[in-house]
Image (cartoon, rainbow over all chains, first blue to last red; front, side):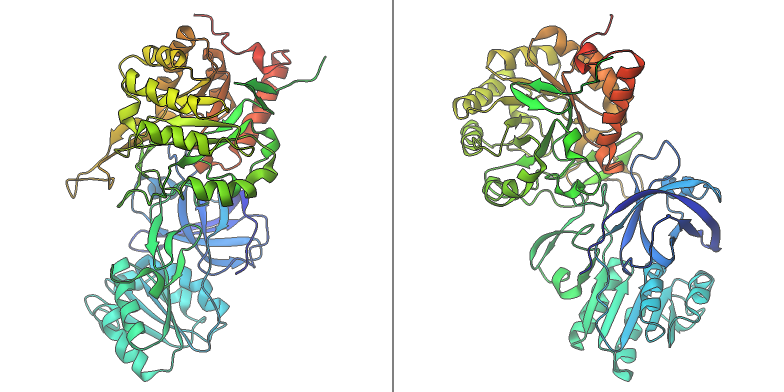
Length: 257
Length: 304
């Protein structure tokens, strides 16, 4: 595991725009420090540039380029609503890179993402240099508007599911996973999305005896392992999502208690 | 002009500055190694420690509120033995006084903990009699003077170290509690712990926090904390460690003026992990601007 020294910096917003009809935004920030070594799966704590939001917001790193990082978020509350108002050129305080990244050792990776959980898989796909496949699911075709172009040239095969069947295969990603696993020779699955989806994927990969890593999400305050807001029970005892995760082996965190 | 000094001494503990970290907000210091400058800290107050390891509360543990946050961590900690055997040797290198916040479920447990922590690596113990989130080790001892006094006496009897009592704001008369603490032999007073509060999800009609209620901290509680420090300052002569929503040097200065001998930074550590260094710099600057050289020149100088 590579341990980076954390940085705390006032980043400059280079690009900030709505990329998805369903209130999905992309933030491209210059953090004035080399971001190339950040691991896919790590996250940053962003301070909403508005005096009224107290806690930082944890956002996964969707992409890096030189000293720039890309974050993708959806408007879900007061914090992200205020964040969406931040103008290009303005400053935003970034703390990171936090947590552990995905383990890249494998020959034939399959990435599985649901909704906003697709975002951190972009950097992961790039780390696999076009050798990974992705299975991504959204509610409907309209919500596929942002991930489709982002993943266009960074994966080998793309499998798409929508809950209503308006694009790709109808249903949830996990419903179609067994067939995809049976028809391909993946040796590792990486999943990020709603917890119920990750749990189901973990169960399926376990049945196929394929390694699986999941990226968990939990309310947190500090992101540094101090506040103990994001503690979870694992097979190896209590762990902190922010510091010991957010990436875990699926068998470590999803088990019948 | 002589050099500006933030050095101080509190209950016999020599400190590089009057800036401490509040228990539960700074881990064991290690989490902040990349950001904090331990030479600018007066002391590190580590996470609330109990005799046995505790896994803390289930469910959602924090909720953001206007200018604040609620928490119900529930004293998750590895237990006093792990602290003594594994953690304290690791954090010795910071060369910063370590104060251990302790919680017991009985009066005797406070005594036992104080006794176990009467070791070189520990500068003092801070008695947590005001954690709002656990039945045992918590608020029961801190809202009623008699039980609080017996906890202080039990700790004092079992250690050579200074005993700091952390007062709960969830009382009617904070000055009366402070006087009781002084009478029982406490060496210093920390205040305030969090204010009990709650948050409700209007879509599910359920409490946001797994523990239903939690402790409110952050800027929202600062006016309450300041008022309590001021009231306690008038009531006792013990050293006071003021805390509650300190986010910057200006906030810290307000506490000093109200009568705090030292301050502790809590929630702000979660937001700005280098905040203690910024407050240190801000205090130096303020003293310079006021043509003062010693932090003691402003302590308790509120004209009211």
